[in-house]
Length: 373
Image (cartoon, rainbow, N blue to C red; front, top):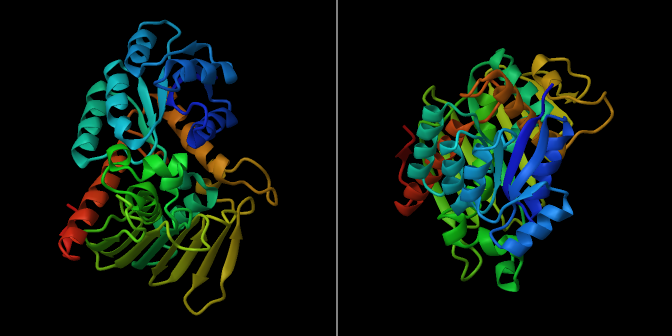
């Protein structure tokens, strides 16, 4: 099996998510990192590349795309791990060079940018993965299969929440590097908490249920004084088939670390998943006892596709992240450029941006219902 030659833009010294992407790409031995523009600062780019033994270092992503596209051993795919405002221009440069893209979420800072990327990816016939990490958990995929097989019956209610507390204080004013760019609309885009973790919650609900809301009503709030983006979001959903849903995302929820939780209730049963306990899934048939389903024991094809070790050995965030990379590698190898049944693609990224735009519009209209056509 040939490894995919991978490049990376962003993720240099001091960056959190760059190291996570590199570990995820290596975990299943499907990639070889061969080049990168790890920083726009030439000195930092060089030192970051040297620290991880990277063969080819650039300080300009445009130069990297041009040169790598012309090499016989150039990168076949690029991982984009920069602040949000750079996602679209970087992805555009590499797509134009004929290189596959693996991009952090949110896909871009506007729906127009996202739709342009989706159009370009189709025209260039390139794989474009968006790293909605939590879709890679084996039990998330098992839950998806349960919904598809009708074990829950007709879906009535979808409840998803993502709560953190790390922005409860104005840490951006204390030079917290992550907080500085994530709360700067020039770098993160107009959506703060909404774009950062709200899009994860939205995608998780859609991935498991296969349902996108027809309309939503939302309220976006900024609790911390002088913060320039939202830090708390609430939304209600109406689905075409009559189901209802709610989404809550907050980064000022004291005591919560990374509490992404999904509950789905149907006419036959309900399921509950907590990202902080990713090796278990609860299934409760109406009128019956709750069943604790554990990763490793469940033998569904959906779960087995993303399972690496036997029952009793925990798998977590890095393995889920790696699964997205592995699914992208499979699509690259097979030429399945529009994605397969597993991979979250540029189209899912566009759906996330459409959700963001609708939430901001609804909140700006005092919670008016906005169609998600």
